[in-house]
Amino acid sequence: MDVEVRGIGVVLATLRKVAEVDPRGVLEEIGMAIHRRVLEGFEHQSDPWGRPWKPLSPETIEKKRSSRILEDTGRLRQSFAWRLLGRDAVAVGTNVEYAPFHQYGTRRGLPKRPMLPLDEYGVRLPGEWMKEIERILERHYGFPD
Image (cartoon, rainbow, N blue to C red; front, side):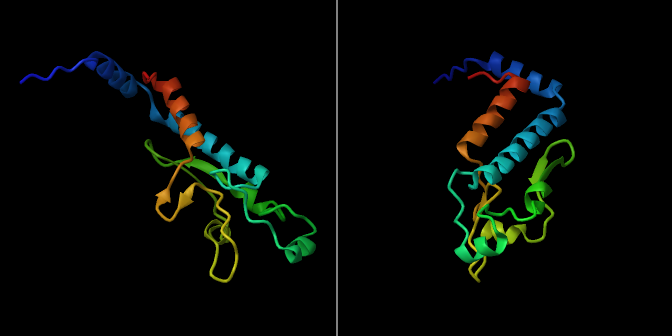
């Protein structure tokens, strides 16, 4: 029995290209893209998967004098940033202490309003986010279809 492998030249050429490119530039671009997507969520008042955040209660709107969700002073929105973690990872997040309560909701009734693509299983990038990352990788590494 024989096994025929075709296209190995394309694979080897791609691997050589990957070895030549400094991953930090690629990761920076991915970090900026994810950061931009998070900020778009604030603009559209929706989670990373495009679902609208639960509306504010009338009492909250009265108290805030605004119906903008997760935006009172702007601190939370402005706190999101990206940074490289060494040569092989990028992180996007916030250091605002109350962000997890909004991301995951609370037992006391604060509704879940995800800003980052995290769920109970971990990171789950939406399809459009993945397509953008794939385009970045294609641009830098020239991965064939």
